[in-house]
Length: 499
Image (cartoon, rainbow, N blue to C red; front, top):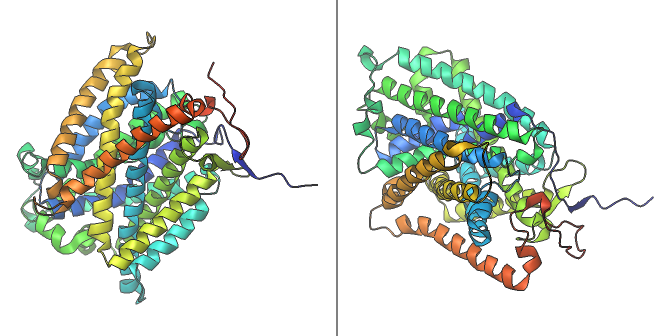
């Protein structure tokens, strides 16, 4: 009996495999709490020199909670793995949607690939110090890339179980470390709340501090990316989104503040610059057993791995959504018959990561500053652009449809306030991007990074125009998701309009 072709361009991903806990694990794992604390907050202190990093996390959490109001209102009506791309399309039109898709691909790939830098550096350093193994950061990164390539092709719910174990363990250890640091203030001078004072956030480094905060949250919005694979999207996505924002916001703010208590507010920047990602472990090691400190270091590494895996899934699903609708080559809409995973998108993301890693190795670039901090900051900027556009899209969408059950707060007021707040953060961030990168104000890099999104958006607009003129049947199905035309690979593209 001939074996059937294992993969087709699929209308949908594997449905009904994820509940609220699993989605929360995926998106909070992408935010990587221990990574944000030991890596993001510490590097943020060191590079920006801003004392108000803890407050930045809390401010960003409040703004993102406001953003989530309209975001989840739209998620109840539109279930599509394309997330930002789909919402912008439905609210602002197809050209804007394709532009958003290009921005999303750049942003999430930047986040995912950037994390390989800190993962490789931390793991190689740990192996060298602990076991005397003479290894390099890039070898550790490539091995991780290979493992993630395999996991990316497995069932999504199995990946969720892996992330659940890692996430619970790292949150617990982070809270233990926080308790130790707060209980042991520097020189016994008492607990200081100086880093939570607004004056330590408002200033020349405001944009840098806020985008550092946003980088720590990137991934929470991925609840909608997994919507097609949930058991009850209208219930799962909203709850998982709010839980993710609350958990990450409180943990980040608490942990970044606790570190400043242990070092003293006036010494936190210098300590972060001197000790880097080792800072939190060095602060607690005099007060905990060596096994708990070692466990924390292992969990830091697994936290990074969990974030890499989660962002890999996000990128693969964006590629799937675009391939399914033929906006990008239809091969990207290929799913595995055995696991339901977006096979082609997963493989493409792995290949791109390897190419970028090779470039950094050849350039002999610093994996922490140039790969991790620069690329994840670029990714955070892209997600900030997408959230701002989505807030506007939510308002536009609900002005054109009946929404008596949603109310003005969800459909108009909250998205409007969110657009204002996110837009203001975006403007300040772009103006102060040199502080974020740690380069001179005259450096071309401060403009090259934001300009990459202008190029991505222009590419999307141009491609939408090409599709409108050359392939109108594809153009008409942009943003429709499972309602768009689907067919086996290499067969003619049927036109199927939504009901």
